[in-house]
Length: 120
Image (tube, rainbow, N blue to C red; front, top):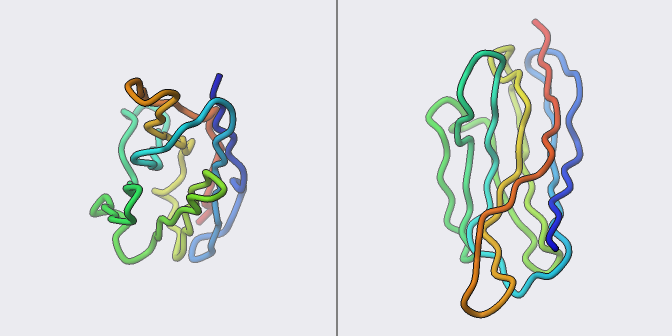
């Protein structure tokens, strides 16, 4: 079994910062892409940022220049540093990871979600 456990969400004023963490544990051989998604009330889940095992990153246009994704491969952990937060960043943030449990089998896993609320 594989688990993704997120932490770091909370309430912050506009212009503030938060750092999200997501640690993967369990039967893990290796991890391919890791990423962060978010879902605001009444909206579809959307990709915020992704990072490959080699460190290549991509970001949603709405967060470019404000958010930074990084990972610690030795600890199977991915981070999301969020700066200059805006009220429209308010959402539940979900961690996602494409995990190999054996040499020929991989699948995506999701964390339970962590609430980020930005007040104006």
